[in-house]
Length: 371
Image 1 (cartoon, rainbow, N blue to C red):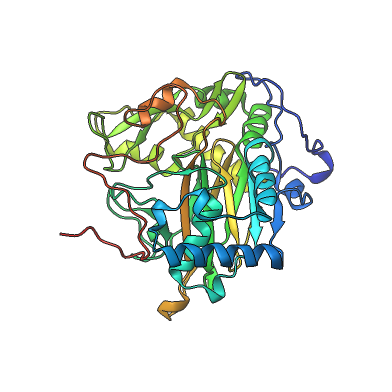
Image 2: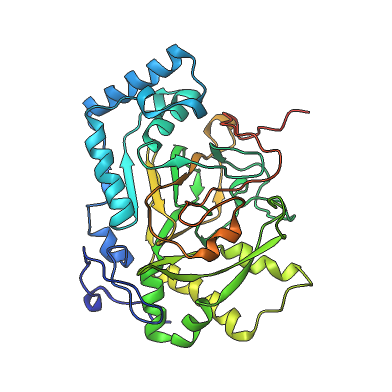
């Protein structure tokens, strides 16, 4: 399949028009990788004064002995940086759907200080929600199992394996890089709006498949009263807004359930074309230490290459992750409610909720539930 050349790309837009199923979508989040590379509006860098503010806020939290999950906006004042973070959120939610903040001094922070700084910045983007059945509000992207993803309860972010393109079960996902890999682990992002538009040009018959409901595997993280799977279209339209819910691996793994129908050839073709277009339209982000990336999951998909890690434990690839809900965010279809427990129309995706869960912000990637 031929790659779209830069000279035939339409200019990036800062406007949005009401989105209609099976029609092209006009949205600021519709971009191709070459366009995003040339656009600096989504990149931000900390100044010395802003870093000093973060240092002071971290020191204040430590002095008061606050648990990370209990830190509020009032506990983490950033009087000068506040304006820049507001611009980041505007770009994230109303603009390109991706932002990068560079310069958090993790090289001189310990793990707790890095987590506090990250949490305080993340508060400006949204409200933390649970990332797994342990109730983790702070996640660790860290290799615990090697390049394997065996088992129905395995999680790809605890491997060094290739991660195919996907979106997470929240409004916004954030990552801060504490240590990059020795080799590989290249992160890529792509606009799901652009993927939809490009597929509509080439294969509208496959778009027609993706606006239908698709089963998704809960991977043994089953809320009370729910099935081990749920249904939701991949391309969604609500109140004139487009959104994409691309649980790539979890969609494909529903075929492990004998009770569910087998994919048709058209469905397999649609899934494969999503992957092909994401790779074709991607922008590679290349994390440095102290980088924070936020992605708007309803308009962005992301992936990662296989990586080789450093042999020293203290140098292993390590990212901290936040899943965030954004009150007042992009309207979502009512079918989204089936993913969550107790969610009411108009409320935001609440992460992963299971019976008996207690929220935690562990500081170790090898955290285990107490016996």
